Length: 302
Image 1 (spheres, rainbow, N blue to C red):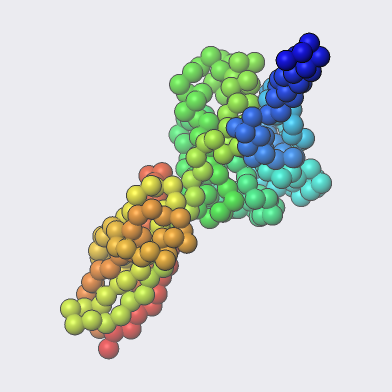
Image 2 (image 1 turned 30 degrees about the vertical axis):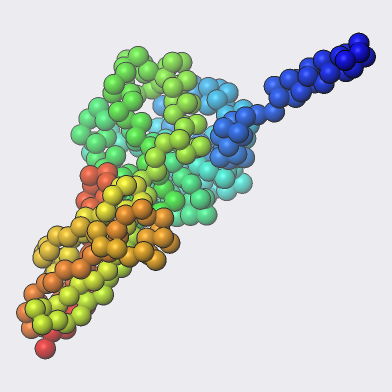
């Protein structure tokens, strides 16, 4: 190879090296592709000094903030209603601390549902659990987790264990984040936005019931996309558990549609006395909360 050819080869290698350094890796590209273009953060005073850290952790995202110290969920409903132009592709909710007595569950549940109704067109709403330093805040988190069963676009991000495990993240009150806590919170948010953290999705299923010689046969399928194994099904008759069964039977077409790599079908026999009965199927949810009711049917036995 002559000197001119060697020079051209060296230049080509240098250009290729520079271009490769400017081109994101596949993992980086996928990570950035998962992030939203716009993000709304609904917050109270806990995040009062964390906004710069969150924005710095998400430089490619247009982050908007909406909230004020002391805001409750009911007030946030009006805030969102009056500032719809700020609603982003995804929404982070950091609310629930400002209940100085144990909240009325029914009213708090209504407030959560009112806010989620305002965010109904958002594909992904991530609600942070509050730091459980009291019974009242435990109630708040219980209602948040239950709301995820009512709103398919709601993901509950368990922030409480993070702050309980490391008190250096907050000021002396145990709630408000310091600089270190703000940085950890920002990374926590990013992990949920790019789906690095699991999303508790709602189980699904269907069934039919028919008369058989040994009683009434309940046949169907059930699937929990987060469980990784066959779902545990409870057959409930008139409010009482009549049978428990695991959905291990082969239903290839249904499993293929759902993306399940295991059985999703089940069959069980239940005894029904003469009269009208309400038969339901429930699936145990992987997060340890109350089983999720999937479907109910009325059955009349002559």
